[in-house]
Image 1 (cartoon, rainbow, N blue to C red):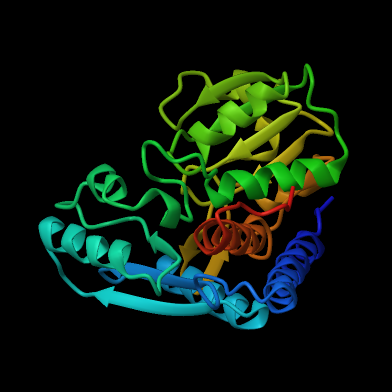
Image 2: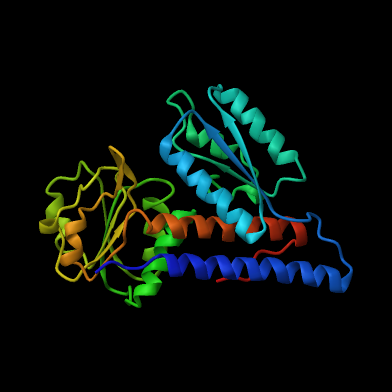
Length: 284
């Protein structure tokens, strides 16, 4: 069956909005001004990417809904050196509480160098090599797993995709919860032998309809992270026919992406609170 993800995203947004309001009330009551009046998230985009544009538009909409200021800095073309220089200016701007650099970047720009230029307390995506912020998509997947009420301890979890924002951080989060983990990618030999034994299958490879029903264990939880454009349609990495076989399947669109945007609000609040008060969010 399809797992509804919108209610999860709405709950998280309400929690962030409530805490942001509480923070302002405490400041007024104690007459201790916040160092920053409202959170200000700056979105940095390089080049033209349809997926990035859609994600950024969703961020802007949710920021407005919650009460977070959102700015977009778009570069049609920029060198790595100039991009890093621009990020350093944002780092020193006291009016900016969070920075997100959208991936993918052009081939001549090294993402790791750009991520390393981010100020730790402004890195809302946790991409700096020394950041303790968990990337939003990994957090979103953990929220989905919590919603299923499935105990992770001892469960066979297969993750297809090892990106810095999904596969790698997710592996560590699940390892902490005593899951039995297998990390795969699209080049893994005999991939089906891994996917067929997964109690929980998480797919983030960017290949439309890559996972077919015969690759999935009956009653498995399948989380589809993929966003792919096939003509005018948006499809995931998992064939929707898997719905009939899986215990739960996250939809695309309207699935992981919705919760990822909500988690970005939580991380932005965390960064804001750290800079405004010296403490992180109290949200779980």
